[in-house]
Image (cartoon, rainbow over all chains, first blue to last red; front, side, top):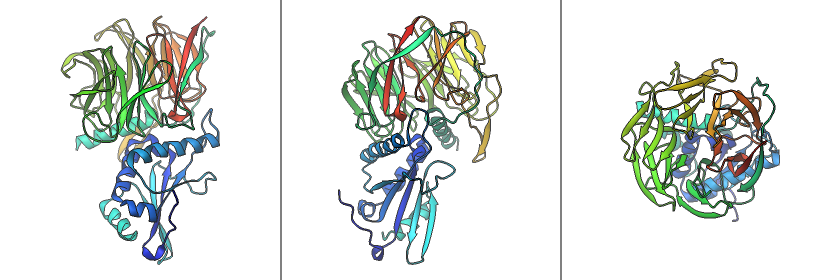
Length: 136
Length: 322
């Protein structure tokens, strides 16, 4: 599926950073899912990008395996929950994993020239802020 | 206030029991090996869409394999050769649907499944048709099907009943195994347990270095430590002192009376070492799996099922007796 380009003039953009360990954590998955459900499909497709973060490989697995594992788990979760935003894999581990596994939202605030990070689960006020920021 | 705490505890328990392992120091010097494993079936690969992250697993008398997948919220059935033959459930809160599927076991006629967000046990038949919900007053942290109308369950409680309950098919408590040792602190009484095939129970503590055998619900035959007996480390998270390491993740028994206890991150190879005991609790040997698992399930034909590829593969092993 072709991914539409981001258009900052129509609203902000955000990255959703998803630690692979979130897939083992019911609360983390619930927080991620409730955030995704709050985002209209049109915003998911146009203003949001997901980044999969990887932990070091465990016994019997290579880094390449871990990337495939993360992508496949995401695919199962995405399909089951009709999540629309495209996902990118941080194979080079450019992004730092949060201390407590889970997911976070990075707001790319171009007008202010700022990057802000919010950790899931979002408080209602934070969610409202994110939705406003994305142009909802 | 208690319910959110219990749900929080259930989620923490799921992470610690199912999640990835960190390594700690080894302590074992087992005697000569008498058992070995030979892989004879593998279901799910990294490049297919069969399994995403399975949690609960059960096997019926015919060797059909049932699993719950927490990523796509499905209950899946495979025949004894690993062919997919059915799926049910899906995301939702309707009858037979899941939000966070966890535990599974089966009797001759039924499957018993739990969802982290549901206080009760969902009952399906072997054709994956949803039948009913057995309500429980607590989130279920572990279960074992003893027969079609007897299910052993451990509830997640903060200060309440510290026992394994034997429920009938309607959820009525018919017996209690009440002597679980409760140590101060959250989740310290968390256990995995299984029938020993002789009318008794095997109990392995997740956060205590302790394995027990009970001949019935009132007689503890033995209780032993295998990692030196030291208490597990805890960390304050959100105002609660939560255990940060696991001693044992699962327990099962074969038809010969051998007991298989899957070591947590206290083991030399976290999530990979299966400590094999005789019926008296003496160490026979340690079997080391190639990959970490959260589960060590033995079916009625003495075949061992464990996790592979981080939950995308079920590996079945024949247990060979020298």
